[in-house]
Each structure stands twice: as structure tokens, then as C-alpha cells.
Length: 484
Image (cartoon, rainbow, N blue to C red; front, side, top):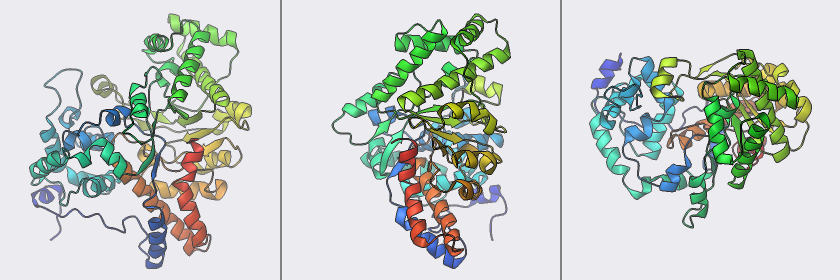
């Protein structure tokens, strides 16, 4: 008899874990056969990861992973957020609580909690990634549960000590062609430099310039951030011109270490292009604490506009991840910090917001931007038409809540008829979970194979055309869009 509740399922012992080879492919047999062929043509392509949050230090140090909880649970806010929604405290999942208390739970206890709640991930994109990580990467053959938790913890802890499961060995086994990290402009990029200078390392890891805390003049820590930037650049950030020059200085530092892109998580895509005197007046008011909230927002938009101007000059691709209310729950932010699962989508608007930028740089061959949103309603209404006209605009892949199979289908349906496949930047994994990189790329390849198989079955594309498209979506397009 099938289990009727999570509690019943928890009592089952050693349920096999074996992801189906045709997962996410069409159920209709003829389309499924087309999709299989398309998927097989790209399943072993090297992975292009132009945006993510794995740190270069992981590969520079190449230390063994200590345990499965620290590898798969604690750093993955896709996992922790859903468990938190079911009443599990973040400290019980290994996150450090700055408010004190007893400290984060021990890894074995974190793993037990995760395994006891395994059924909660049914139907989610995270469940597919986790199954692939456990089975395909780590060799697990039974499903997590309350009964198997300790056995799996011991098995995986032992396995992770083996040489073939160290970070560099896994990097090679994932066949990653290029991995982009996301880095603060004040970072000295020592770990990137160490990798580049290591004769035993043959991979490619590049930094990405993420200047959010220096551009957000509405944040309480903005003035302190400018002091950090001054220390890193050696340029006084006490006036507007100094701040701009310091940002330009750090961009050049990143470029010399292989960076090809900047990344921005502004709440919306609006930018300002004020004259120098106006910008300086705003800067002085915000710095002195006399500015209104509207003035601080305008200065933030002006600084984002400076980033677009700089990209038009130095050629670094400007990726915009907008439309997210960051750190929605203040107490969680205070206790556990940012990027802990409570960034929530907002409505987005691009047509009016981007016009000042695009009228300046939209046809500039040096300028390139990749647009991401969490608002599906603008895919066909705004983003596809913009990318279908401006040579500088690429469509970013669905991310955060939208990097799930059904959302990926909706994205393709919404944008392709207007912008085609070749205004798309390909897939990004956008992950902090190292072992989820191949799982997420595999999901995207399966979804694209299934989508294209439908178009072939409808005689919209030939199968030869579909094979070319799927190859380009997972190789040529991310390289081109991010100038890799």
C-alpha cells in the first residue's frame, strides 16, 4: 500500500533512490523519443556557469567536505527556507544565530532533521536536484528518512573524505568549463589569484563584480561600505567623484583577474543620469544624513546608471537581477544574515525603467546587459520585445523561484515567438550548493529537450534545427551573453 502521510513514509526503511532516466521528458512516446535524442546530444557538454555563488576559496583550499549536512543542507537556502516554512528553526539547520542561544545544531542533528522531512520536498524543483546530487554525484541508493538518516550520514561522511570527492576532483567530474563566482568589489581576489598561479590547477574560475552595498544609498551601512571601498582602492570616497573613481578602480582590478561581468540586485531597473553637480549634492546630503528617502533612492539609481556607463566603456556585461524584495523578514536578517531564503518576488517594470539607459547605450557595441526578473508577467510583454530590438539586451534565464521545470517551460513559451532562441543567455545555476551545479544544468537540458521535442512534433522546427538550438543554448549562448 502506498504511504498516505509523511509520518508513515518516515517509518519505511531503505526505500530505493533511483531518479528515472526519462524524468522531465514528455509522456507521449513519439515526443519522448525525440526529446531523448536531443537530451543525449547535450547531456555530456561541459558546463558553463556564468552566475553563481560558490566561492573560489572552496577550490583554492581543496579541503575535503566535512559531512553531508554542511555540504547539502546548511548552505542551500532553497532547502532551508522550505523546512523553515514547516516550523524548523534555521539554527536547527546549521545556520549561526548572531542573537546568541545555544549555537547552530550539530551536523548529524541537521542531517536527521533534513531526512525526517524529506517528504516535504515532493513536487518541488529542489527535490529533483537533491535526488540527482545524492544519487548521481554521491552514489546514494536509498532515500533519506528518519530510519536511514544515521546510516546515510556515516556513509556520506566517510565517502566525502575520499580524494575523488574533494572540491577539485568534483569540479573535474562535473566537466565545468568555466565557473563564475560573485564577489565584493573590496575583495582582493586572493583565492582567484592562487588558482590562476597554481600549476596543478587547469580549471577556469572567474570573479563577478557585485557592488550592491556601495550603490544602495538607502542602506544603513552605506557610509561604512564606502570606507571599505576607499581602503581597497586607495581612493578617497568622501565625495561623489571619488566614489565613482574607486568603483572604476575596482572594476579594473576584477578585469585583470578574469572578470567579464558585473551583477546587480537592485529592487528595480530604474537608473538616473544626473549631471555632476546634482549627483554631488545628493551624495553630500545622504552622507551627512540630511537627505530624504526619495533622495537616497535617486542617488542609488544614479550609481546604477554609472555602472551602465562604465560597462559601455570597459565592456563588462551588466547583469541585472531585479524585482526581488531582499531580506523580507527583518528578524531573520538580524539573526542569520542575508541570503537565508526570504528574498520574495516583486512586480517588475522594464520598458519605462530601462529607456534612459537604452537610449544611451542600447546600440553601443561595447555595452551588453542580461535581464533577469522574478515577475513572469513581463516575459512576453516587456522583456522579449526589448531583447527583440536592442542588440545589447539578452534575456536572463528564470532564477530563484522560477528556475523550476514548469517555469522554464513558461519562459520559453513566453519569449521565443517574439525574440527567438538567440536573444537568450542560456542557463545559470545561481547556486551556493556546489554539488547542485550539475543537477541544475541537467534539469535545464531535460526541460529544453522536452520543449524542443514538442516543436519538432508540431513541425515548427526540424529535429536537426532543434539539435543545433539545444547545443547553442547550453554552450554558445552563455559564452556570448557573458563574454566568456
